[in-house]
Amino acid sequence: MAESSGQAVGRDELATLKLLALEGAMDEPTKVSCSALAGTLDASNQTASRRLQRLDDAELLDRDILGDGQEVRITSAGVRRLQSAYADYRRISQSAARAHLP
Image (cartoon, rainbow, N blue to C red; front, side):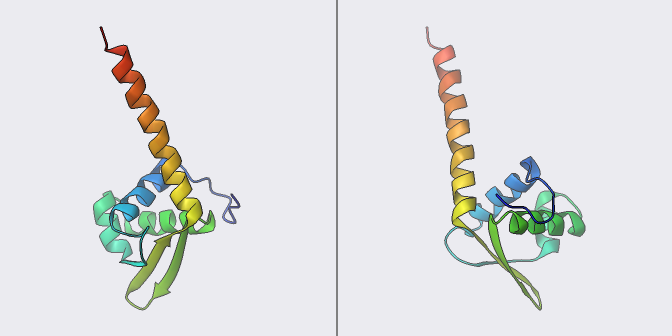
């Protein structure tokens, strides 16, 4: 994935991507304000803005800046990244379940 900002997409950005998916951004453009996102993330407006910018730079998110916020939509690369994380958690869960079998 190309990242023009030079910033790696880490767990905080992936958590933000997951939150946006839960808000419907995989299915349709979803209106987001940095202040509302910051409140949900328990972070500053600047942190929320940086996370969105990093996701956009990494082409995991499409973002259109509006006068009163922004619309975001998770790209196909973003969906694949979420699916990969889900597969990892599923393997962990299955492994833990097998470890507890008699």
